[in-house]
Length: 377
Image (cartoon, rainbow, N blue to C red; front, top):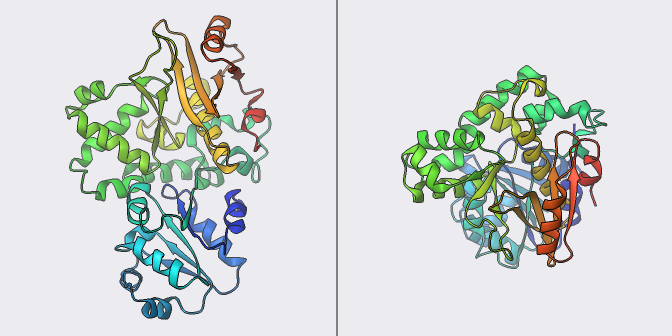
C-alpha cells in the first residue's frame, strides 16, 4: 500500500463547508485514496456513481429524498460523479440544505465534471487533481536513491501505482490495456469526438514528438483532419489528464517564438505503450526526451501538492537558444534545463535569458541533483 501525499490535504479540508472535487486520470488511484480516507472516518459511505440506481437516486433534487438516500452518514464519497445527470445542482443542494454532510466527489475528466459543477458550486467547492505517483511516494515501496536505481523502470513504465507495484510484464500488460482505449473512455464518449481512430493516431504522433514543438497545422496535415478537430481533441486529452501543453514564453525579445507549443504526457508508461517501445534506457535514442518529460511532469506534481502555484512555459529564440521549462511566480522567472548526462546549459543561452527577464535564474537538472529539484517544499 502506498500512502498518497494528497490524502492529508483532503483530510485537512473535510467538514469546512465545501464540497471537495477530486479529479484524476483513470487508474491513477482515486478510488483507493478515497476509500482509505473513509476507513479513518466514522459514519462514512462510498457511492459508486457508475451504478444506475445510484445515478437515479442522486439526480433527484428533492431535499428529503436526498436525505433518505444519504441517510445519517456524515462523509459521503461519490465516485465517478460525472455519471450523475446535473450533479452540480445535486451537490449544491447538499451543500446548502444538508450542511452536516461532507461530500467528496471524484471524476476522471475535468471537462465533464467541471462543466456540471462549476456554476452551481461557485464558492462552495475545493478542486484537487490526483496525478501519478511522485518520487516521494514511490520511495515508500522502493529504495530509489540515487535516481539511477529506479530511472529505467520509471522512464519506461511510468508512475501509475500498478506500474510501480507490479512486475514489468504485468505493468506492460496493464499499460497496453489502459492506453488501448480505457484511459480515453471519457473522450470517446464525448459528443465532439466523431473519429475515434483519429484520436489514437494523434496520440501516437504526439508520443513521437515529446520535447519538440508541435504545430496544429502540421498535425492537421499529417492526420488529414481539420485544425479545429485536432485542436479540439488536444483540448479534450488535456482535460482527461492524458497530456499537457507548454506554451512559449514571449514577452520581451522580438525573436522569441510565440506560436508552437510543446506537448508532454502525464505518464511515460502510457506514452511508451502508444509507440510500443519499452526498451531499456541504454538501448534507446529518446533518453533526453523521456528525462525532460519526466522532470517537467514531476515538478508540476510537486508544486501542486505543496500549493505552489506557477505559470509554466518553455523559452526558445529563433536562433535556437532554449530553456526547457520556465516557472513564473509573482513576476519572477525561474528557468530549468534538463540534462540526462552531466552537460551544463550553454552560458550564452543562460545569459541571454537572464538579460531578457530581470531577476530570472536558471538551473541545470541532472540525475545527480534531481532530488533537490523534486523535493516537497
